[in-house]
Length: 323
Length: 231
Image 1 (spheres, chains in turn orange, purple):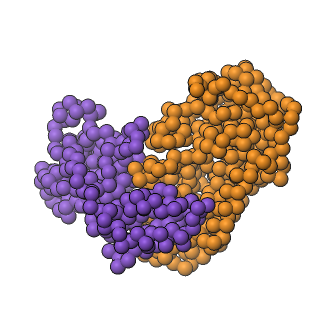
Image 2: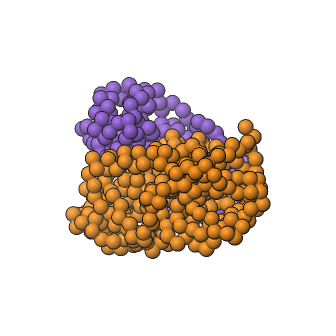
Image 3: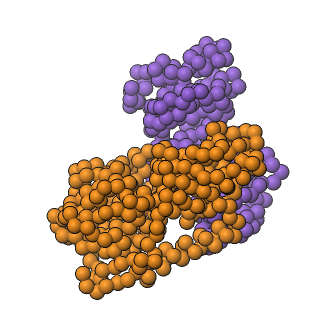
């Protein structure tokens, strides 16, 4: 199958990168997982153009790009609420859009709520697979579009020939998430909660924390009440996963996100559950976050429910015959 | 080393198996052995292992298994893991390194910290045989030990914003090499022209593997350039 040019980047936006579900199996070599920050919106975008779950999309952050279609396309935008324009006319999010050659797809202004949106192209964006994934890992300089975020003038490719959907797909309104600027996320305590005082844990679970501007795909640095250690503030370096909440010597929590480094030397008070790491992907600097302790059983039920909601997406889409 | 490994959940789809809480080759070998055992035994639902100094992070698929079932399967493997540690610790990698000067700006402070000459510090660092305990921090970064007490030096108080690729550093009794330019607080004593990480080399993108033995070989700036090193 030969790829074809689908989009020319007119304006790249604040930080737009190619992402799929992530890069698995190489963490032992220090390679982060990466992948879409919000797996739900990512899955919606792909389902709306009939893609498979791991097809690569553009992840748009806060300020979206402007793209010129180089051929007729089917696309969908899901996630943070942007005003999406096609040739200057407002186009709906959360549904299939047909775009003609020469049309300009633009994200006007900044996201009204949420932080990240996904633009899916029918059949997926075609960039080279590096270590099993198309996801961009900017700090490592590989994956996606030359290992970096998009720049003006870049040309994106997709798989050809494109087989268009015959129907227009729409996500039912009740499945469209609302992104609040205050978010409560579930955590399982540990693996090093025993290194914190009981007051420290109590503080962590009861206080509101604010995302600082030092928050990106790698992790969110939080500001708020200090979380005290019993003694040592470092551990013998061990492995980290997305959702790990580490607390360094300054007692301010850091939540590791999709591009988390694979190992770290600070104690981890808790781990955010998989569905809530995804929800947290829509938080932006100055948003507030609170942590709620759940049992391992509740966390497991949450995971299974999240997985079920993703696998049932396609059948729950409204499919309209006409465009 | 703990009398028996400790298990703890890590969120909803991983668990940590901890063998001890020190940097120790005996403990580290247990970690590597369990990591290989998990792969070869193909525990149902186990997905990816991340071995570190004293513990192993095991990701699992909650659709196929649970924390309890994983712990059960891993405990079953425990008595057998020593069988998996036999075939390692065989490879020796020599790391040509220019010590000091602009390539190793902290060699002076390491030597001063221990009241040694720079030549003695170089000798101590390059005459020691190291083992690769783990790879992490940034892609391909080998954590090696142990550095002789006579040159073991704490990290810089203020980390540097940019450390060039190939930089060889010391942090306490660990030594490591930066595969690419990155910020960091390790004391940089030299630089190697070796390429440590190549994302296009599958399935082994990193030069170093767990359990490798490593030696540093002092070279001149000229040799560094001849080996393709960048200045």
